Length: 444
Image (cartoon, rainbow, N blue to C red; front, side):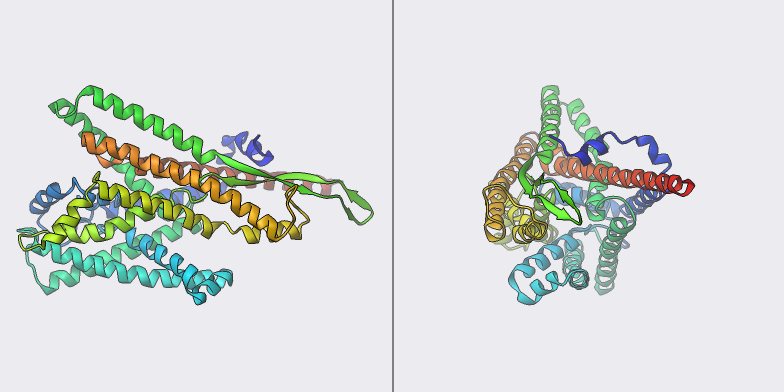
């Protein structure tokens, strides 16, 4: 059964949106920030020959490079200043979060609350600059090695390219933080989401063009559409799935009144990690593949060519590594965002307990036991969603926007954003009720 909060949120009057001034400001700010991001994906890098670059990109987009173009919102195909996208920041976040589980100093910062979180965010920003500089230099060197792409190769081009790409990544990171703080939803996820959605019409048009040319049959397109709809429905069902643990509160006396015992539920999402594991896994696989694709020349070592070929989209090694990373990050991020020990301590402080389980350490062990097993199901679900459409893509050659990763991001971010909007509307509704009750009390 749905909770009282969920029932109230489901019955909210969306017409109240017109009266929620703060929510409207947040929505307009989010749309404006995403519009600025989309404009940045059309600003070209200086010193690049568009025709030569288009030819070089068409030769590489069938591999991992095409997936990188999807995450950057088409910036790679347009040799724009946002070529690196938000991936350096995501990679830096992965490294910092891993360090919080390895280094005692980072773990202590995590436990310090708001001040520690700000310090960890600062470390993430510094690491983002470092990773972006390394990737930007690799891209500039790779562009120079490609025949006819760079008009005036040399040190000045490399420096200007590194500064431009690093500046683009830092601006996107700042924009994402502003959306999170002053807008609606998670800024980084919305940036990736907007890039995928903005390029979907182009992907659909190119798929229909392939059908018109006879490269793909009409039956295959119908099959792709059916699979996409089925995957979306499966994602919605699994993202809403929960395991609810019964929590019992005993009778207690407050002043002269005796409060009756109450029961509640501790909801544990089947996929606690959300859309983070596929994004993290993709970003890690993109780091070496991006540099390798740009460095492909006649003098490229054989081992680099072999690795790049094995890491191609739809290749067995890519699928294996991708599956392993998705499963790893599903468990890792679940451990980061949900601490059974803290949850058990909070229940104990408020007098709550799970029937049949002793409060404290036993409760933490039981919650961890349940969470581990539902995370196994959640990790398998993520792997199935991300890989099954990938086999279809490798078989048919349709654009990456119809893959499981892109559909998972689009559906999950949409659901999270709508939930946040409902939360703001719910808060606005409560504020209206409180104001009306105060006015009535004053009249009495």
